[in-house]
Image 1 (spheres, rainbow, N blue to C red):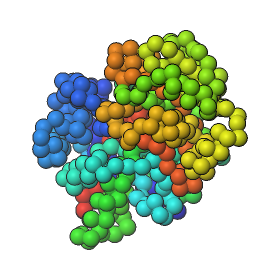
Image 2: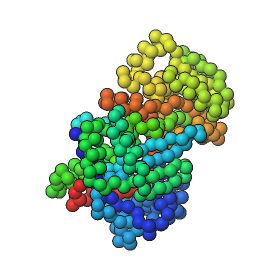
Image 3: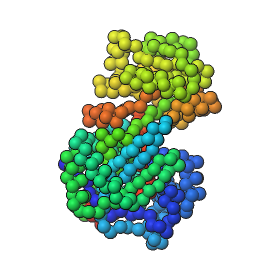
Image 4: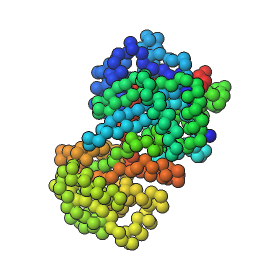
Length: 425
């Protein structure tokens, strides 16, 4: 039984200013340039809490939360609520809408088979977020999850709620319109609790946050009086049905800084793939990928030439793939790219972000980075479906790093949740 609860949200007040000057992307999507830009937008920008520039960032974040609450820049709402959150966005001129629920979700270790991860985590980001939790005792950002809703029960619930007046509406710099509705009616809250109690959850984004919260929960249980209602047993989450047509995953293209596309490498690739010369522009490369989305296909570009690569329907090739990848993950292009192309053909060692590999979202950006010399070879991939990610997670399998890019990211700064020792849900 998945336990979902309303919570007493901490939110900005009108005194803080225009919401679009306050909200941000999630902390792990904020680079140095964005961080500086957010700081310039407002003295109350949410980046000053989730990713302070200052050296003593955890203490600074805590001091700011206390000060902003005292100054009525933020306020705690005493009536427990859940929130319906909608994102409206466009990709290549086509409009999409994604709608989900923000609520407190009980934390479950993965071994309990209630919440499933789909990718591996790293110790440094978890230590960072755990230190932040220890200091501020707040969930500053959501964990983003998905769950099955084949009967459209929650989807229909969201449709009814979104007919009412919203709490907040803000458009981010990418042109995504984020709208949030507050739900305080106990009957409506009880209904959604009952519906979601039968679900299992798969983490889309926020694996580090979720695992840090589990560690914090265990620390608090060891040193404080607690009950099942203690807020630190929960995490503020954004939950979206798998059936939602706007639940989008974008491809994450791989740019290698040190590899080269020599004639010998191209010949080696031809043992496993049918290679086709492709015009080196974003439209043609995207069209090639779209035309081969049901096959294992990639595009590769080195600043001079571009090729479309489609895996051969050959028994020897499939034997190699089966030998070098797990049963469940062999169907994913990013796994074949990693294990066949990178490890076997290019002989790459461990690939580290920004050191020898760059990940980008858009084909046009990948081409520009290669042309500027920021990397030598771009491997372009098709996106993975949300359904496929969920099925993989439920098999206790995990994908390589940066395999999924759920888009758009939920904004940070709409709500916070108190998880201090005295807080109950």
